[in-house]
Length: 428
Ligand code: ACO
Image (tube, rainbow, N blue to C red):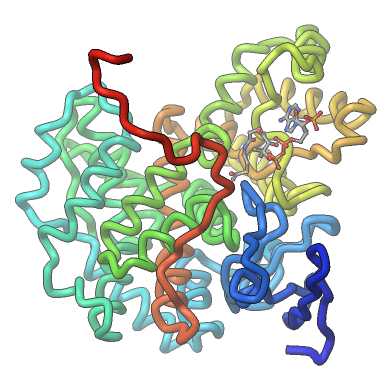
């Protein structure tokens, strides 16, 4: 809170609105009393100028390309931390001690199994179902299996539900994949790390031992860190909005998964790799850049541009480096990486992208890595959902504990017909 105010004048009426300051970042004008004082609403479709809540989790400076979780820079976390440590940090506010991390890791590990009856639930889906369709359904169904952690007023139940969601998401995603290829489900193994376990559940088979490549395990863990949270993006806002009505956490996270699926959000990693494969050869890049610039063509460069970042997405920098590490560890290469590098170079030197401040985002390179590890494109968004569950759950907990929390209920600018008399069908 500051003692500054903003004066807003509507016709002959002037109102003073308090200006609130965060730790860093732009001030916000508190318009909570604005409608009561003026009888007018504010209009901001897409929330381009609207802060929907107060949060202590994640800070983004889009102009400078900065992303902090609880004050720690994403580059440092990606370099030195682990996904479990970042999960603890987001949920609890501080980095864990060695003992706290061990206990947290152990707790998550021991929640990775799914209720056995859920396996039959999978069999209700068609084999060609998109993994995100399965994720929406199965995560939503968790509330039917874990009644003992759906009382959102009980902090202990909220914590158990949070742990369950983070722990079970890799099992759910891996099972969605196994189901689609007709292989048996692989149960979790408590000896393995969170990410190693996920790799084994996805790529292992009961007939032989699955060997985890440490560099791949580390790369995937880093990808999870990069996707863990991103303040009030569309899916997180969806989780908060669903949760604001008092809905149970499993239902709220299922809502977040549904929102994430869209190609303008989490679905962009799948779309980006598909686009790079379609381009196929560096010679074809100018054609696609021309299409992206053409106002009459709906085509956009996928993995490019961001609502908040008007500079290089710091996550894309780490991703680009990780591609090289994974290629080296697996002794593979993919011509699509050269297409991506050259596309980035050409776009960044083009006036259209420079003027609109369009840079590669986290999704531009992630698909190249995931594909090298062996994931089909349809799994990309499911992996994003797995990692983002940590952020969703942390944001949901923060919202429920916030005394200023109210049910989310936006208003509208109504442009439909004013009241008119009903006309009987024979008179129309
Ligand atoms: N290719 C070509 N032009 C673009 C692109 C792009 N990828 N992104 C934005 N533009 C142009 C728009 O046409 C628009 O031009 P105009 O002002 O002449 O009309 C201008 O840049 C601003 O675009 P908006 O859509 O208004 O920006 P907004 O902030 O609403 O959208 C978004 C951001 C959705 C990410 C957009 O950049 C986009 O569609 N990118 C491709 C999809 C993508 O990569 N999504 C992943 C986002 S990151 C994530 O969810 C993890």
